[in-house]
Every structure is written in C-alpha cells, then in structure tokens.
Length: 126
Length: 317
Image (cartoon, rainbow over all chains, first blue to last red; front, side, top):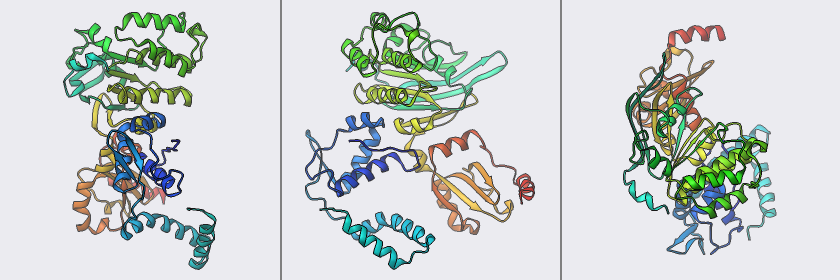
C-alpha cells in the first residue's frame, strides 16, 4: 500500500488512519480485502511498527477493519455506521475549514452548500 | 532469529550510569544516565557538538569511561569488546571503510569476522542497494559507500544496531534505504536500534523512544508518543509581559514575537491552572511537536527575564 507520510505536524499514525479510512470509504479497498501485515507496511513506509499497530488498532475500534487470528487483517464486510456524535466529531474540523475559506472568498453558506451538492453528484461512492 | 539473543535477558539493551568524560579542558559528557529498552528504535538527538558521538564511542568500547559505567547487551564494552562487537552492528557518518577494497572483498572480510554472517541476506542487500561486487569503494559515490557500510553493519543480523548520524550528507534515496534497514532490524530480527541524528523528521518516523543530549548531559528521555501526550504548546497574546504566567513550574522554551508568546507546558499542570486564572482565558493550546519540544529543550530552557523582554518589546513597537 503506497501511503503518503508527510511531516506537516499531523501525527503519523493519524495520517495512516485517515488514508486507509479514505480508501475503504471510497471502495479502493473492498470489503473482505486483506491489508498488508504490520511488519510489511512498516518496512515499505519506513515507519516504526508500533505506529502501524496503533493505526490498525484505531481502524479496528472504528469497525473498519478486523483482525482474524492467524490469517491477517481484513477490511470489514459491512463497516458499521458510526454514531451521529462520532460523525460530527470527525467532520467538524473539515466543516470549519470550509466555512473559514468560503467566508474569506465572500461565499455565502447557500453557495457553499450548492457547491458541495454539485461535487457530491460527481464523486461516485457506489 | 539469532540464537545468541537469549543470552541478553536484561530489559535494556544499553544501560549507562553516571558516565562522565573530559577532553583536556572541556567536559564532553557529564553524569549521563541512559536506558535503551530492548526492541526499541531509540533516537538520540542533539545539536552538533552535544556529545552524541563521544557517548556512542563509549558504547562500542572505543573510549573507556573516566567515571561511571556502561553496559551494552549485558556486557562491558571495554572488558569484552570481541564478544560485544560480534553482536553489534555499527555505522558512522564518516567514510571509514578501507577505500582500496572492492565490495566483494569488504563482504569476504566481514564474513570472516562475524560468526552469524548471513550470506543470503548479504546477497539480497547487494541486489537491493544495486551494488556491483567487483567495484572498488574509492570509485563509488558517497551514497553507495554508505550502503556498503550499512550492508556490513546489518548482514550479520546484529542484536543491536548503532547508527551515528548515518544520514547526514546523503541523498534522499540513500537515507530511505537506511531507514528501511532500521525498521527491518527491529521488525524481522527483533533487534534494538540506537540512532543518533538531528534530522527530526526521520527520528519522528522510525523511533519509538527519544532522548535529548545537550551540552554533554541527557536533558530528557521518553517514549516518542509521550511528547504529544504530555506536553502542550500554549500561545498567549498579552498587552505586556507582566501579564505572562510566570508561575508555570513545568514551562520551558519561551518564544516571543511582538505581543505573542509561546511556551511548552506539561498538560497536567496546564489543566490544573488554566480554569482558575483569567490570564489564560485567551490562550490557545495544542499538542507539542517533536520539533518544538526539542527546540524548547535546547534553546530557551529557563524562564526569561520578563522585565528585560518588556524593554525589548518597547523597542519593537
């Protein structure tokens, strides 16, 4: 798996969590698909194995991946919907960013919503 | 896995106690205490001249402690150098390999020294690093010579790999090969890595422990995740330095830009004091980064003289 690790302040395990979550949600990683081993991913990303283990733990707690004993780590067949509160917590910083940027460009909330709808129809989440 | 690994049952691969060293009139190391846990990738960070290389020379038995003690894999590096060096891989930033040798000669030479030498692994590394066995070291680039040094340091699958600023002056691909070798050493062979560097980005990536060596002393040593978990960077905007919280006991690394101040504080103290103090109402806090923590520890460690800074601030306005 080719993930991009940058040093712009976001913790490395968080970068890994975010990118794998994105791949699962965007169906680049299909339900039931096997993830690389902790050791393998650590070597290919040149990142401490503990960091990968922590990222996998977070993804497991979020119900996106599951460890099957002796066989490996897989994308869950049916990722559970996260709670409304959890969704809000994850989305909030991004919404704030959007609002700040759009306000700076003098864009109204309605215009922003319209842009989001337009964009949403273009991205195919299946 | 290396059968000798069982011999070292201690919890720490390296234990240094009260180690001091003088060179003529200068104090290179002063009462250094250091524990490197087994199986960790340990980052030793510090400015140039902080004493990193001097400390490492004590670990491989190249220097004898003037006072204090050093134990590596449960052995005394000065008394049992042969047994120790058999189990340790060592690479330095300097180009210290004999340049008249070819890659193959270097490999044959090293195989004769190390009883645990792994020929298949050496061949694999040779291919991975695209080294030509017949090429003489003196005709190779700095990056390729560093790869040869790395091969020689890891092909006997050492229990402990010591890298003294391995990346300085190398191109990004060569640095990346070094990082991969570090990860392999811990993840496949269950070894321990001590990695001295001032490239914090690399330390952040591969290390799970980190210690700062500053002016010959260990300032702090902790699991790298503790930096974000334990420390906050707090930013204040104040009308006058008199309004700054001068009673934060754990604060270090004060920085100022006009009316804006930033400081590193321990989370516990911050959570305890913030609610009760009006001066902190406008403060913004976030988890400390490795970069900020390091800069704070090695530059402005004590609380600045706020009266003094008031004077400088007036000239700024």
